[in-house]
Amino acid sequence: MNPLDSAVLPTSMDANAVQAQLGKLRVEQERLFAQLHAGEQHFRRLARSVWRVQEDERRRLARELHDGIGQNLTALRHRLESLAAAANFPPNLGPGLGTAIELCSTALEETRSLSRLLRPQILDDLGLEPALQWLLRSVAESSAVSIEVEIQIQGIAIDGELATLVFRLVQEGLNNMSKHAAAHNAVVRLTRRGPNLQLLIVDDGNGCDATAALQRASSGQSTGLASMRERVLLFGGQFQFRSNVGEGTQLRVTLPLEYSES
Image (cartoon, rainbow, N blue to C red; front, side, top):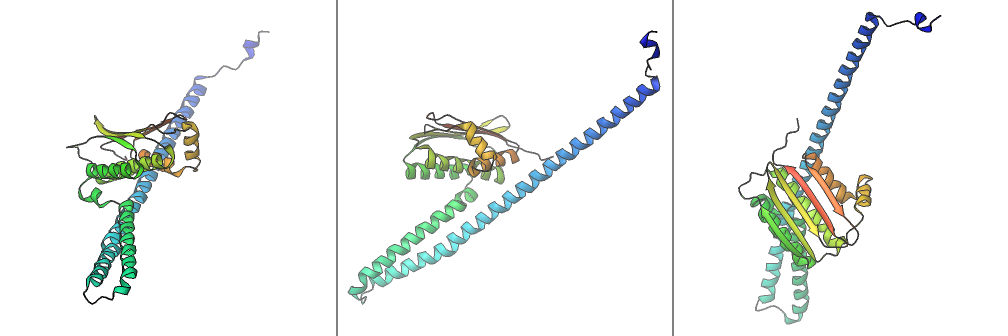
């Protein structure tokens, strides 16, 4: 007897049932994907809201330091200088008063530096390009690194959050370079390419194992690099970090000028 004679062939009803079940599975899969996408967008909105609150708090603290403590220290120094210049001021108190004036000046400068570190007022008052020029001059002066700068964003509409993100990326990138790279030369380039901003930071420092650095960032061991990458992704951008030991470091970021969270 031929075994095929006893085989049960699927009927058209069975085939229709299979097709119906496959259709249900496709609908369920699409629903789950839609839920996943909606969840990701919701997370991004929340994360950007948290970041916005952090920047607002930085701005508030920076202004309080500058307009509050900074103004009081300035007034105190002027008062001490007036006392030192008074005709009836006892000469034997001069050295002590001079020390007090120096301490007051040091505290004032440290307060101003902390205010600028938290949120440079120039970023809010004059915009991204002047703020970056100020930052790059400050880093070059403090670290003795020769920095080549190319910024081509004139006439481009950049909203406040995107400008803040770019500033923070450059700030963190240069901070890492100053602390770890032992670089002599660096290049910072910010230009427009079609609908995107492109940021490039390159140095000739010690370099590192890029794969290991990114792995440490993913595991939370390198908060600076992880924070930079996460913020770029929140704005729909692309983040590339390339480095080899002894061959310097390259950070390349692409950010859309207009980003929709939908």
